[in-house]
Image 1 (cartoon, one colour):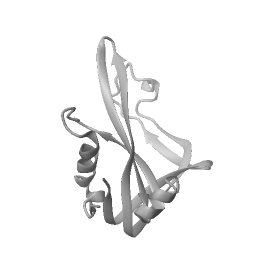
Image 2 (image 1 turned 135 degrees about the vertical axis):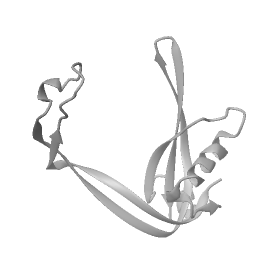
Image 3 (image 1 turned 180 degrees about the vertical axis):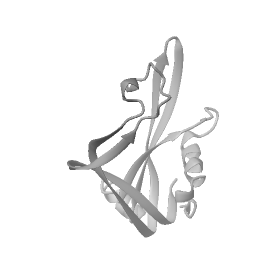
Image 4 (image 1 turned 90 degrees about the vertical axis):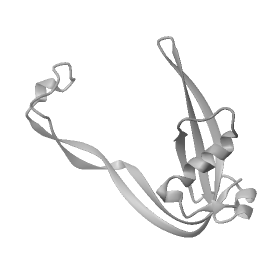
Length: 140
């Protein structure tokens, strides 16, 4: 299973060295339990790591669901399940077969509303095809 075709991919990198200013305005009507309640009605400027967005169009990618993780957590007595899947894009299937870690890009998504009675891998690919970013891709 895989998808292939043309894709425009946007990536955001966060710098560990450069920062930029972020202006925060706190509303007057904050909840008194808010950790920033004492700042209500004020504005402050803070330093945050600089983020750079890069958009690349690939005429062809071979996109593969590389890994699926099932994560459980508990809220009180309630058990919650989360399914995360890793996708990786390559120049070709041959390049993927030669070195799975040499990808063009890698991303982790959450699969919402998984059906345990159906193939989980197929559900991940179907989930991708619903997103605008991936709608030009077809089954490989």
